[in-house]
Length: 208
Image 1 (cartoon, rainbow, N blue to C red):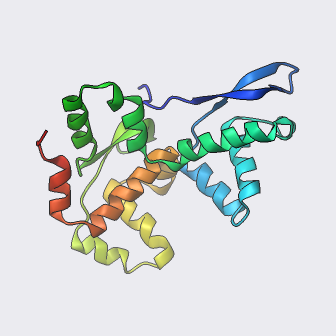
Image 2: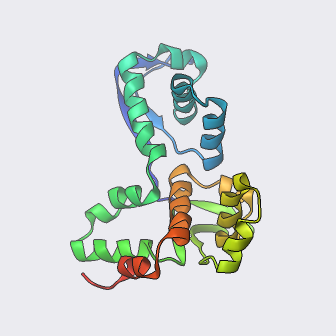
Image 3: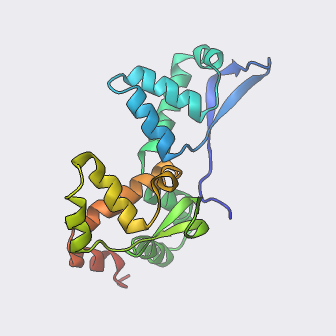
């Protein structure tokens, strides 16, 4: 099952000498998981400089020495691309990588399909016990009973509780989602808790 995601290639202003002695004029920024991203955020909370150093080291697969040998402008370029790769939801990347090349009518069709409340397409397939390897997550609209149960658990556990309820997945399975897929899933569930039925009807209507 092939992923939609395509790793980002960044051209360097100054070629970087790798630990093996080779000089590279490009670096590849690879996708990371929701769990990896959350771990870095917690480890470097309140320190953007150390967070971005760790993020670029992980995403570009650099050693400490290679990271330190990057020039400031090239590091800034990598940070800019990391903000896109790990800061945007999957809908941004579906539009950029797939929908943008489609005729307008087909773009609208694919956007409506993406926003269908009962499933979430994934940029990168994930392995689950319930569905095996899958490139989309079936979703269940939360009932009042499920929302009431969410409010009965400690506040710092409520988000995980309702997301697991909506997806039927275990926490470690959700942790393996790519960062954009995890962001879009969080936003979809937040909409389930705050938006009206008319909101979802408007998103999935057959109007051109």
